[in-house]
Length: 428
Image 1 (cartoon, rainbow, N blue to C red):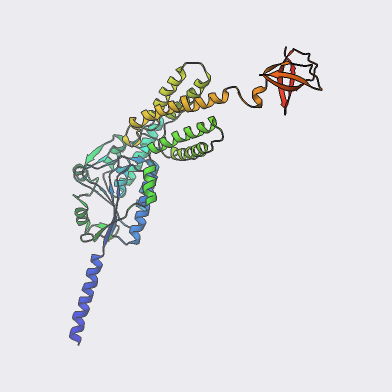
Image 2 (image 1 turned 90 degrees about the horizontal axis):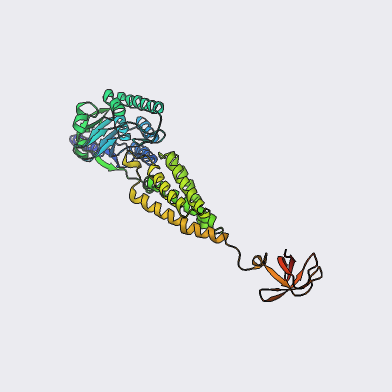
């Protein structure tokens, strides 16, 4: 009986070991857009979920043209605090870890790239907005921001023993490298063809006092939640631009047609959302000023007899303001012309016909009702005094009273009405 127990126990231990080995997982996520608040929230949640799964590591497959500096700092801090090893994999072929992506890649415990990918160009040119955007600033502020970004990326690179000199050059000189050059210059540790190849090369690597077991690990994708997808899709310059236009149309529409309610409510909500997004996105003050100037010119042309000159100036100002509204050095913050041109024409048409027609209608004299009678003239058919009299108004006979005596045949002016009795005074 004892002869059977030892082989059986050995088989059970072996089976348990194999099951444990086969149960190893690699959690991974995919980032292929600009870095923003939604990206930071997604990465933070994915790291927590990877820790709960007890994954060997979490792989961030990255392809980004850049993003917001504040969101980048949040992601870097989250990766430094991560309870599981972090791996940034710049992939697939043709992908790029530019600007903010360079900071995130250097912050990983293991940095990897696919063949035919690139990394670098992390020169900051926007304050309070993006890494890789463009916004006018004086030389002193530009130098301060560049020095801060250079020291920040140096500290990130030195944390994992990577090439600090190149990291500094990526910020100060917008240096870029291919995957092969990055491996040669100690910017990354691995070049992998795909996720399976990356898992094989990670196996046995010592990271954070632990040895990774990834050769046969299962790849588990942590997808974005619906709210994260919506947030990521909405957090774009195009969406903020549309919200701004809705706010303009809604509020102006409510002012020109009081009591509509719906345009005013929609405009107010859109305005609040646009202002919230403007606090994070790199908005150019000059672009906002030109758009506000355009709105002023559109409104002024309704009152001023300029024969459309102010409207033409408003169209030009709105178009230039839209071009300058966001940073334009990189595509991530650039509004396309196919969006700006229709928006400009539609806005001009809105102010010319909708707002202009509504306002002119309100300024027209009243042609019906009691108010339409005020100021009109009539002929006294009988003497008029405080006791009463008769007048002829537009072929109709009316009772009339006056504080002063008025003789028959005199012309009187209507100054008020009490039911079927008109209050009149002598027309001078």
